Amino acid sequence: MSKRILVANWKMNVNTETIQDLSKKYLNRFGHHDEVEIIICPPYPYIDGVKNIIQGSRIKLGAQNAAEHERGSYTGEVSSGMLHDIGCKYVIIGHSERRKYYNETDEVIARKIASAIEASLIPILCVGEELSIRREGAYLKIIREQIEKSRILIQKSAIIAYEPVWAIGTGTIPKMEEIAEVAEMIKGLSRFPLLYGGSVSCDNSTALSAIKKLDGFLVGAASLKSEEFNLIHQSLLNPNIA
Ligand code: PGA
Image (cartoon, rainbow, N blue to C red; front, side, top):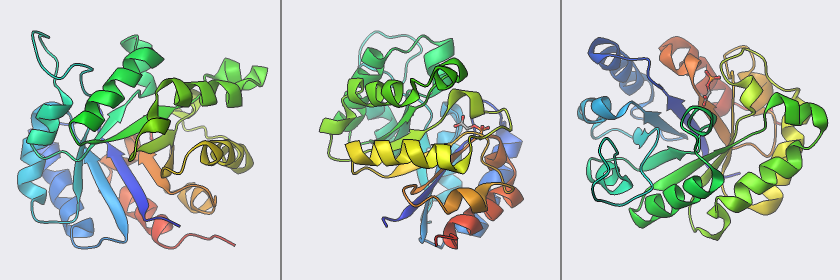
């Protein structure tokens, strides 16, 4: 098994005060352990502040998105090169909230991944089906298409996160065997580390950590609660794999 990975996606849910508090708690709990790769993804304006707090520790920095272009007149955009320049090692690409609210297509996502790689960032590609697709039974085909169209399979280094859209922020997660089925398919396509994301909590992390083909989790809401995130971390440290 490759090194386990735990990504904290703080989304747009923090401010100066909470960022400082959370970053210090993360530093105390995870800063000097490296059994699990902890990756914090703050909103852009706070990345530098988090960096100052976690500097010198084992915790890594990521961003939640990046532009598809490397530079130029793209008001409001932030390039992968800039993110690398300020100390990020990872970037989340193609999160379902970006696909849904900002119309990111698989083609845009492919360009963002190429830009991230060009800037020496490791992309964390998010894929996953809508509930209607799951009900129709076409989920494996859709997820495979998302992965193939992103052109991530031609890259040397990347992470893939399986995040069923209907599980994100809903408190509902698929059955363990449903996640295992998708994980099996994705691992058949690529050797990259595979994460599960979507309502990961301290109540389900032990069961999730027993899924053999998973290398870790991408955590949204529960990553804003340091105690709960710590429990999720514990599950990854001591997986119940039979
Ligand atoms: P959640 O978010 O853990 O709050 O469901 C996960 C994600 O959006 O990556």
